[in-house]
Image (cartoon, rainbow, N blue to C red; front, side):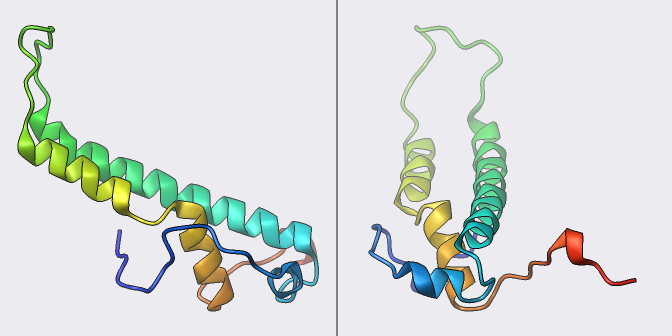
Length: 107
């Protein structure tokens, strides 16, 4: 995931009116944010699993498990990343999300 944008790592207080403004409805905005955050979380999870696949052993027993510094660093990197919901809110506020209402499609 690319986190070169300035995204806060901690939760910040936001005005609900600003979040509801693009859609006209706070509940629609929340659904959009939920779906985008879910997409981001799934992408991060797949990326992390792909990177950690190199460290996987076929025979994992308690005696064979050992600390691997590279694996720990990869895990720490993902722990420091902004949470998916904060990334989704940032994208929504900056107008970087494309969304549409499937019920109001014009033919």
